[in-house]
Structures are given as C-alpha cells and as structure tokens.
Amino acid sequence: MKVIKIDKNEWASGLEKLRSAYELIGPVKEKFYHAFQSLESGQQPDMDYINTRVSPKYVIYPQSELILECSLNENDEDYKIYKEPEKEYTPKAILGIRPCDADSFSLVRRNFDTEEYKDPYWLRAYASTTFVGLACDQPCPTCFCSSAGSGPYSDNNLDILLADNGDHYLARVLTEKGKKLASAAGWSQEAGDEADQQIEQKKQEAESAIQSSVKTDKLASQSLLDLYDATNAIWEKEAFSCINCGTCTFVCPTCWCFDVQDEVAGKKGYRIRNWDSCMYPLFTMHASGHNPRGTKVDRLRQRFMHKLKYYVDKYENGIQCTGCGRCVQLCPVNIDIRRICNMLNSYDPESCTCEVTAS
Image (cartoon, rainbow, N blue to C red; front, side):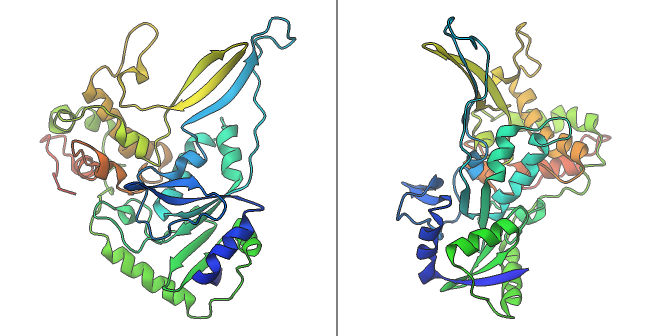
C-alpha cells in the first residue's frame, strides 16, 4: 500500500489539475455549519472542519431524483410510456469525507445492490465517485465510531485516506481509483519509510480521544420479539418526548427510506424518488386508510429496531450505524441512539429491565 506526501502548498494546485477530469465536492462553511458542496473554480474545501450537519450521502443518493419520465402528448408514439431520462454520470471526487461517512456507503450498499435487486441510479453514481477521506483527529463528544464498526482512521470504502501531518498530508492510496486521482493531481512524492508508523501513531491518539461508545455484543442473540415487546421498559419512555420531526433520519448517513411520486407538468409526466422518513405518520399509511405504525411509539420502535436488530439479524455484519453522532447532536428532545443501543443490548425479558446509560 503506497503512502505519498502532499505538501499543503501544492494542495490547491493539485485540485485545479483535477477539475478537468472530476467534479470536485468538499466541505464548505455555510453560516454556522459546514456542508458538502460542489466546489466552484478556485474554491477550496475547508479541510479544518470538524463534521458537516448533513452527511454527503446525497452525492450518491440525491434527496430528490428524477428516475423516469413520459410524454403526455397523445400524438406521440410513446404516449404515457415511462422511460429513463438521459443522465450524465460525470466523474466526481468527494474531498475530505470523514471515515464514518465513507463507511456508511458500505452499509447502504447492502440495500441498493443485492442479488435480487440492483438500483441502477445508486450504483452508477457510486461507480463514478472517488472517495478521498480525511482522518478524524478531533472527534466530537457525541462520536462513537470506533464501537460501531468504523473508526477515526478507518479506510473502509475509501480510495485515498489523508492524515493531516502539519504542513503536509500523508496520503494512503488504497485503490486504482485513488491511484488515478493522485496521478491526475500530480501527487507522487513518496512519504518515506516512517509514514506508516506516523499514521498508526496518529490513529491510536485519535481512537484514545473518543470518549463515547455503544455495546453491541449481545444484540444478535437477543430475541427479536422480546425487544419488540419491550414497550414499557424501553419504547414508551423513549417515545414520550419524540415529536416525529424526522431530523434523525435526514441527517443520518445510513438511512435510505424513500417515497416515489408521479408529477405532471404540461405535456410531460415525471416519476421522482424522494427521501422519506419512517418517523412520519404517512410513511406506512395504506391506501385502505390502515396504518400499521399509527402511533409515535410504533414509529420510534421501527427506527431503532431497524438499525439495531433487524439489520443485525439480516446482514450479520454489525449495526446500521457508523457512530457519526449527528442524530445525538441534532435531536431537539435529546433522544440518544447510544442509550437505546445499550438498553437493547442489555435487555432482560424475564425482569423487563435493561442497563440505562448516559452514553
């Protein structure tokens, strides 16, 4: 695995070289928060950011996406025949993505890329994107990535991992996509024999700075029905303050629920996929009027059972969470996935009790 040195004085010129081949996307400050945006000519990503309010999942999975369209002109041969619109999947590079966010695409892929079903829109966008990660040296108090299967220096799902080393980056080039991007930017200086040791030292320091964690070791062995029926011990108490605003689902990098709507404008029909939220009352409303999740207790239980039990049982590969901590930071009523995860992990159906922790 190759490690190269990128002098920060050469960072901007390298990005300018990339612009002819890639659309560059990076963290930019908007008033009080950072967000991932397409970088205009001459604009640099803010590599000193801590984390963004919303994850960059929209780059692969837009919040609103046209998937089919049709003509509503009766004189057209293809009248009312839905077709896929022409789309350009221009090569993109996400610069400075945090390892927890990069990891999230691996978790989400299990839903969009299966043996039975393959989502062409998600897969094409993913294939056209190069992920340049920025290791996290300053984890937030709400971060718990290292106990959620990720980590501040995780290189999972990255093409390049950057480690800030003062006046330069140590760049671990991980894939052929990463090699291609580094070559296009003119970044080729060997970092030297001590680079791997320096990265490992920084990794250990970053991991030791994480103060928050979740326990997941017993989730797989817990009875699904016992956890589902823990209404008095867990679900009613947690749902009491929930206002079903959906903030947790929209900021989450691993939430993938969507709705499909048909819209008409003039002589054209459009089928559009939009992000949706299991926290909304209409999400599971049937055409008959019946709603299997008609109360907020039902909806809150669904959100956490999906991430911490259904996903665990179905994929046998950890929880559906990378520990970014956004939902903990932004929930207006302080519902904390770390607390609920630990409660599910320690739940005893005989006594209807569980371990309640602050984080």
